[in-house]
Image 1 (cartoon, rainbow, N blue to C red):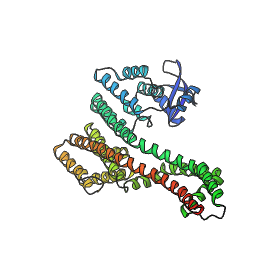
Image 2: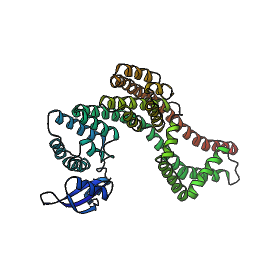
Image 3: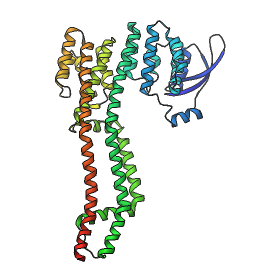
Image 4: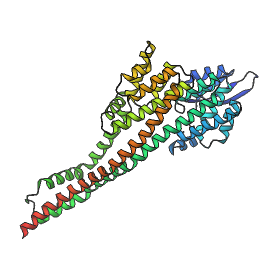
Length: 407
């Protein structure tokens, strides 16, 4: 989505100018024409220095917290009977996030031009997800936009809570890993070479050193001699691996891999099931058709394996099967999910039933994260202790051997 600066003439003959977001210039011109404007000039707008600085320091990114607040405030204003344009303008004026204000300017212009709110939001896929857009469209069609916005805010808060808990659980292990890596390189580059020099001074160049000490000195020698080659290679390798994981094939490989790792597999499965249950229940509750709800939910689960499983289930549902039957065939979903889904399909309360499933699995995620956090901490401490022990042994063994020779 690019931003285009335009000047145009409205139906009254007045010259107006501004910016509009569109996928390309032709779409921007078409949008302006639809709004009853006659474009005179449409050029892609370059970011101003202020916007560039904001992006550099993270100001160009709209955090989930700001979207949640925007959604709750919009819900309250629409529920109170405030016209949608007035509500959006008020939220724009009081927003503290510059990037969100910029997005709201475009949304307001699109709504003024005749777009429904859902269609206006769809023009900003980096800010509003497919789930968000589809639920807003369903709310507008059913005349319950304020209720749908409340559901959206609640759903986003739940998703944000899970993400924060995962980040919190991973912070301590990642700090330990970082300290371990820095300590390893520091020892290899500065400490081990000095120890090797001392050992050579004590025992002479022909002294027979233990195998462990020889290995450590060899690794240290490689790092000292070729650090200017090794560090760029390591950095390039990490960059390429991270870039690969962002590609469709890399993402598929990573998502299949995490579902094979004991401990991690359990957490990933519970998170995926919780997201499926909450998103699908919200869409069904909003009146979105089942097939469309399955498709949107599949892309919102966050795991390629589950996404494909839901898309396959959607094809079977289109052929006359039921979603509960198709999910029951797939081992990715615990038995309770198809059972509860079948009850919802029979009673017509799928959204209510799946909310309970989502609540249950979100609590299970909390327990699983706490459990794996409790395991990771001692494992990392043992790993660091083992590394320090190896280095200490590689130093102490030759010293002890030389001391006995001296005696």
